Image (cartoon, rainbow, N blue to C red):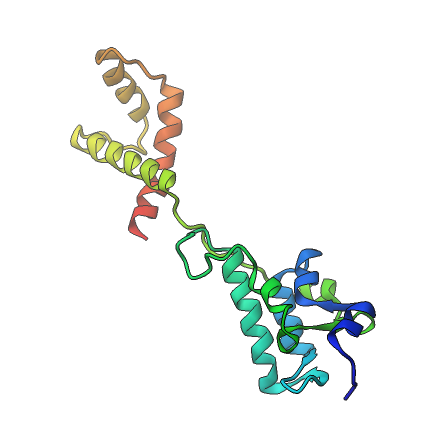
Length: 189
């Protein structure tokens, strides 16, 4: 066990989680590194050491909160703070985790073996409105016995818009009709 203060560590090229995230190392890669290689930090007594076993849970939870904060688009979420949890954590020695620069895992190799899946984008108000409009168009087309995905659907709808005095081109209608299946699927989720 080494006796080293957080200040000395940062002066000696300690790579904390927040620094690594800022340098482009993904949360997924860091989580894999922690699980497979351990991580260093300070315990509640100020001792600098490598976390093992259940001790890895604290840095993993911190990393998970950072990931949730970063990917939260709902500003009324529990992650409404302007600071990433990793930035806030660096004020307390027992929540600083990372690796001495000369002992960092090979993040590129870890990334190569880690499949990173981004969470689904949350529906914004604009997306919901657009989806609603497309679903309404599909319902009205169905009422007129027009199958949106069928051949000639765009031409039939173009005729209706022209007869209403508000012509829309077949190409424009065709592009809109192509968006309908995805909009219907989003409404079902």
